[in-house]
Structure formats: C-alpha cells, structure tokens
Image (tube, rainbow, N blue to C red; front, side, top):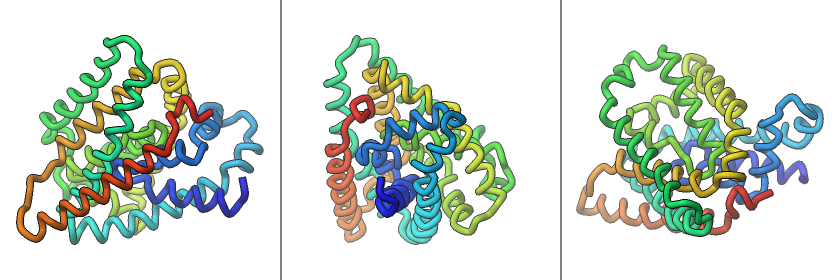
Length: 272
C-alpha cells in the first residue's frame, strides 16, 4: 500500500472510530483491510517486522484521527447534543438496510435469529441496570473500571463491522466525558481506554475473524440486534419546530452517507 494512502486511510478509520454507524471497522471493510488487519492482530507476535511495515503508519495515523475526531466531536456534542444525536441515529439507520441484506444473503438456520434477540435483550438489560453500572458523573474521571470497559467496547466495535457501542456510551452519559478526556489527553481516561481497547482487539480479533468466516449468519444478526437496541436506547424524542427540521435534515444526511458507505462495503467474510 502506498504510504500516503496508508496514512490517509488510517486517519479516516480513526476519525470514524467514535461515530455511531460509521465505525472504523466499516471503513476497514470498505478499504479491503478488514481481513488482513484482523489476521495480523489475531497473531500479533508472528511476523512482527512485516506487520509493523504493513500497518505501523496506519495505526499512527488512526491515533491522530481519533484525537482530531474527539476534539471536534467534544465541541459539537457539548453545544448541539440533540441535533448530533439525530445525525448519529441517521448513521445507524443507514446501516440497517445493508445489515438486513447481509442477514438474508447469509441464510442459515432460523435459530440464528436468537443472536438478534440476545443482543436486543442485552440492550434492554443495560437500560434496566443503568443506575447500578455507572457511577455519578463527578466520580467518573478516576474510575478505571468504567473507562477500561468503555475502551473494550470501542475495541470490539473496531473489529466487528457495524457493532458500534457509542450509543451505549451516550445512554450511560459516558460519551461526552470520554470525548473530553481523550481530546485533552487526560491520562486518567486515556490510559484505561487505550488499554481496554487494545486488550479487546488482541483478545477478540481471532474470534471476530472466525465468526465472520464460519458463522456469518449469526454474527450479522447479532450486530443487527445491537444496532436496533442501541437506537432504542438513545432516541431523544421529537423536538418539533425549527430545531425539529434541522434534526430531520441531519437524520436524512446521516442515513444517506451511512447507507452509501455500507452499500459499497463487501461483507467481512468476502473481504479476503
């Protein structure tokens, strides 16, 4: 891969890393990097020199993209939370048609829809346990468990296309503090998030690679259940008036962009 193209793609993947519905893994599939990258991460200590040559600059550029994206999103989300939520919901809704097409195309036993039901029920369970799972906002900054768990969720979303956890973070009130902490390089937030994400990627890269090779039907339906459940978690209600029109336009724009990107992407199993 040309160095400039590698850097550009890495930056875009990092930039999309915290965007619901436009998660970095979707762009990895679109760029044809999903299978090579997950294969390298599944065996991180095999061919270390070659992996560094192939993906070193990519990861550095992705890190820069995450920092730039966090800074921009932190500012926008703090000032325009409701319109941004509708944009994010548009991103997620735009992923649904392609997920349904993949689910239909992969066929499989009807029991695979249990994966959809399981992920949907997980979202409902998280909603029911909200007050027990997340401490008060003033206690968040020093809570390594919360941030490492958030990082692990982000890591999983980076290797499972469509499985963005950003809406779950928004629902629990973690998303804005996360963006703020990463943007200002707060070590109390940044360090556990990075460690959690790195651990999840290394531990589950092989699992994700195998899932989309051998159980794509169930995996696709599970992601579909997560997307539907996540949208239900954060739907803020209709604001009406001028703000409602702005939200509607952003919803439509997010839907079109996400649907286009997902339509262009092959399935992970076919991206070898």
